[in-house]
Length: 117
Image 1 (cartoon, rainbow, N blue to C red):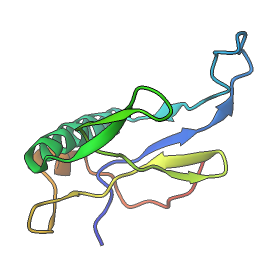
Image 2: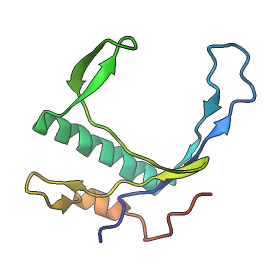
Image 3: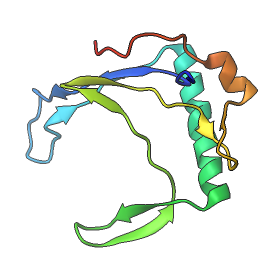
Image 4: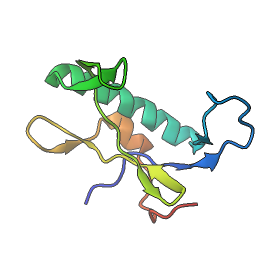
């Protein structure tokens, strides 16, 4: 089984410093090692290129009911209670095989348990 390209741990915390109704009720700090940050940056570049190559779209909302389809892609994160990780698998190529660029291979994380903080 393929290993994640990188692993960035995060947690969801209540915003105890909210002062206005428009302030967020929660915050989500995400932690990156320098290696994981570089791998995440490369992953986002690769996904942007793939979205353009395959003409994938996402919905960009201008209100609760109005949206337009724009070029893009979706990232999925894993959550257990109030903490989790962003640890995507290698990107699948057009022929269905998972691929990692040589650059991303050098940033790949070691296999570790997928346990929250």
